[in-house]
Image 1: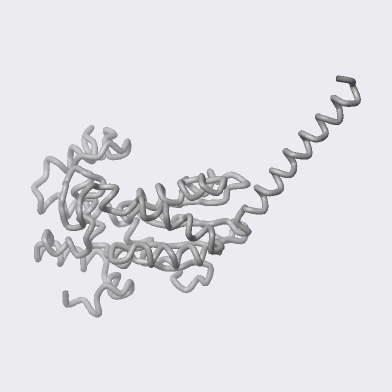
Image 2: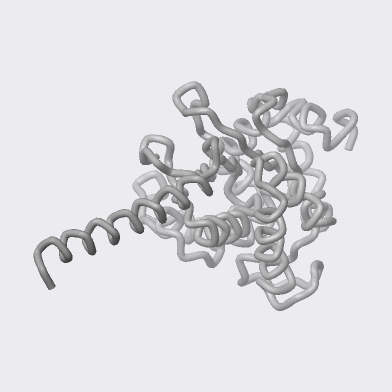
Length: 266
């Protein structure tokens, strides 16, 4: 093969690469896609679903703090809704909340056995013990109260979120549990996915329902599973009257503001 022929072949290969790159870029979302949530509010489910969708479409995915966000990322998850939207490029997103009382109960059971580093790290504040060790040394009533205090950041962030931002779709874990496909369809429309992309994305969602992730039906409990029970309102089975008084004192008006109660007489 002559030098001229070799150069022609290289030019053809380069053109094919550029064509593939152009086709890939056409498939990129026009805006940064963001999902904001909270610890114990379906973070694992959203991470699995959005990561697989990003892989399906050859998009860049990150689940991280905002300061760690890289240029060129297409799908960004912030697990604690700690985000400065003014510092981001044009974006669309979803924001999920759940009844804060269920968040407390979910955290209480999960943190008794989870392997998360922060939960098992020895700390001076706990006299050289970890959060998990302290939690497991308490009675159930004391442990729930202890978890209620640990949840302050998440609950206050929920209360202070801007729920009128037109760039975000607001969803609740309770409605997601009731109809996952319908909720994700609305989310994907908000993300500005086209019909073909929505169909592919929903096929991923269907593979990652509670039943398929846990091997159980909603309501069937496994205390040592990340997907412990899968039903809303579980706090009613565990809150005592003292827990109710403590919650109202710590978070006055939050349940009314978030729409989970009409008044404080619950």
